[in-house]
Amino acid sequence: MHMKRAMLASDDVHTAARFRAALAGLDIAIVECGLIDIASRLAEREVDLVVVDGGRSPDVLVQSVENAVAEGMAVSLLLLVDMEGLASLRLPTRLSADFMLREGTGEEAAARVRGLLWPGEEASTQELIRIDDMTLNLATYQAYRGGVPVDFTYLEYALFTFLVVLELIAVPAFGLLLLGPSLGPALPGLALVLLLADLGIAVIGTLVSAIAVHTRARDLIGPVVGLPLLIPALIATARAMGPLLTLHTSGSPPGRWLAILGLYDLVFALLAYAVFDFLLED
Image (cartoon, rainbow, N blue to C red):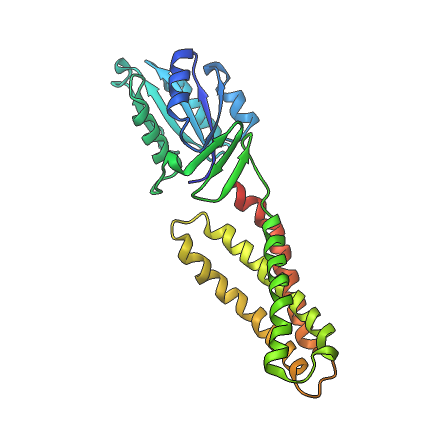
């Protein structure tokens, strides 16, 4: 479950307050407006759900939402109606829509909203931690402040730093215990190859994690998608490091494999930069 934006349109302050309280446990940023302002508000901002307090005659209000959909907006509709309005109720067919009685319980309202915004996904209020205007979603590892997603691209640098520190310990130990000859002449070339490999692993790992976190099988999707993407980088790293670890090394890594590794890193770094914000906002 990840944060959505909803608009609550009602002229009844009591209904609006009751419905707002019912959705307080969901990962939703709510804005409110009067019934007469539905069309103008939909034109001003994109929302994922419109909750309309339609009362006895909701047809005109529903038409305003249908017009927004006809103009290209992807939005769902939850219609609140009175008992007297059920006989003439007409739900739109061009968008995902549901209805409930205005007298319905908060649990029913939350269940219907979850069905519209997160169909088929499990959701629980225990997945959310709210501190003032900050919301932490434990299911997707995302954070929002004032409804705006917090940029988590610093995780790339955290992973990159971890790999570098690990190699500063592992490479000297590997050279001391297994190689025999000194690594001194090959160290500059090794450092260059390992830095490029670390960058590729960090970028690909973070990108795949951002994709997998929006799926229900996130623990499976990460390795299944990430491993095939990492194999070319690992092959290029191994081929570039091989000559550096031989007994009579020149100290320079093969230029072809170094170029392949650098190009691979560049492609995925640009791809991650292009799509990362969209993945966080999805």
